[in-house]
Length: 185
Image (cartoon, rainbow, N blue to C red; front, top):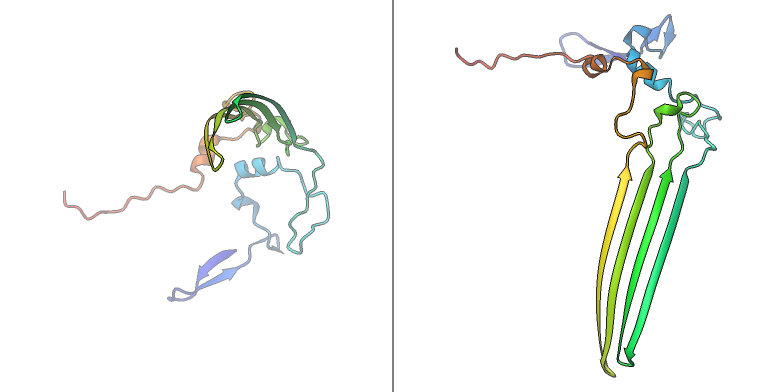
């Protein structure tokens, strides 16, 4: 929509965009060429919209792949009926490969990076039955979580295939505004 001032008041009147006599169509000269290239990566709707406002109009049967391998080792030692101890070690490897929503338009332009985790945890516990009514339990745990979330090719994504002038995109529509601060020279 365009906005035009009405008279000398601050009230604004909104008017619909139109292009070639078609209402609610933004004229091509107002569309950003770089943004259009990004938009063309997204697949077009492929199902009838599920909501009255037209949203939920795309179905993707491609799955996200998750793999989790885990090893758990636990050792128990009973010293006496009153005292026993345990040690538990857990190690898990997780690989999450999200679906690539751009696989039909530009497979290398995925916007979701795979994530891998290598986590380990160690716990030591001691139980001491002091009397029939008193028990002392001591536990210590150390956990390390290592999450790696980056493209498998590293963090240097090659955007040359998009043929976008990134400098122009960064400054598109930006205006340099200099205001007089009223300082005397």
